[in-house]
Structure formats: structure tokens, C-alpha cells
Length: 241
Image (cartoon, rainbow, N blue to C red; front, side, top):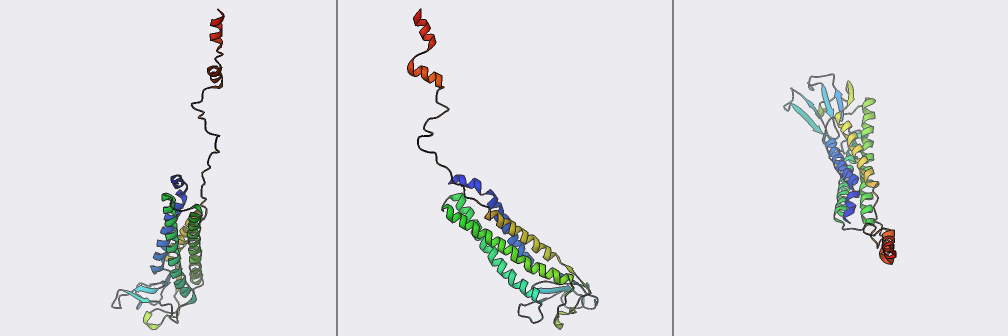
């Protein structure tokens, strides 16, 4: 089964791309710049810009003890809008499903290179890994698109007083975390499709008796006839004399 290693190059690339997408998914979750809030009152938010992420909101201030002031955003907080709560849940699920996809994909590639499992089992592993990658990428696009819609429609967030943020910004912009998440989803979907496109190659065995003779070492037909029957015209001409 060593020859099967030559059939899995695209799936190995899919595993690398999927791992990169999964890492970008976790980086997107921890990145604060999902929304950029531009604040009119700079008495506390001296930078004039606040970063509203999925798990916390931050801004720079010269008034507060911490120059970079951050407050956590919990899933059970009553002021959290629906799109942020959905993003928190989807991110946690996406990290788990992406990890399972990495494990199944790596296990399938390993079995291809070492030839330890049957072709049905390997195809099942690739199909499972590809399905998990695609599911993770598509589901992760939902909160990304939802938060982009909230930014474009300038939706408000009723932050409590300890956040030192107004309920509505002067204007909003889509942060870099959104575009990082879109890239992660594309990587995961593409890696999953590469897994799903795998086809197990079966080597055809020759029929018994068809290839018994080696055509390279087989003598030409005319020479073979001469050797077997001894009817070389040159020898016959000498005998006539």
C-alpha cells in the first residue's frame, strides 16, 4: 500500500490549510476588533475609538488607572445583543468541531502513509474530517455576517456604566477580526472540500497468464521461427551447393 502515498498530496494540503483555518478561528475569537466604535466624547475614551469584541470591550484612556481599559462581556450579561451571544456560542462549537476535523484528517493521512487500515475506513475518516471542516467554516460565517450587518446599520449596545461607553457610537466600522474570521472560514471550507474529493485508488491486478511472457526479452517472431524450425534460408542455400 505504499503507492497510496502518491494519491494523498491534495489531502495533506487540505490538512495544512484546515489547521491554519482553525488557528485563525481561535485568533478571531480572541481579537477585540470586531467592531470599531468612534466616540464623540473623549473625556474618558481619550483615543476616541473603542474596540468591541465578542468577549470584551477595550479602549485607551489617560484618565483611568489602566491606559488600556477592558471589560469582559459574558454570555449571560443582559445587555449583550443577540449577534454577540450567538458569536460566543458558535465560536466555542467551531473550535471543538475544527479540532475534531484536525484529528480525523491527521489520522486518515497517517493511515494512508503507513497503510494500516482498509480503504473504506480511510474514506470514512476523510469524509468525516471534510464534513467537520465545512460545517465549521460555514457556521462561523453566520456570526461574522450578522455582526457586519449590525455595524452597517449602526446598531447600539446598552453598555452598563462600568464600561464607560455610550450606548451608541458616533459611527462604526468593521474591524480586522471580521476579515480574519472570513479568511479562516474560507480556509476551513477549502480544506474540507479537498478531503471530500479524495478517491481511494485500487491497483488492478493482471489476469493470470496474460503477462507471463516478457515482451522485452521475447525474440522477434521471424527469429523465433528460425530457431525452432531450423529453416534459415542462408543455411539451405549452402546445403544446395
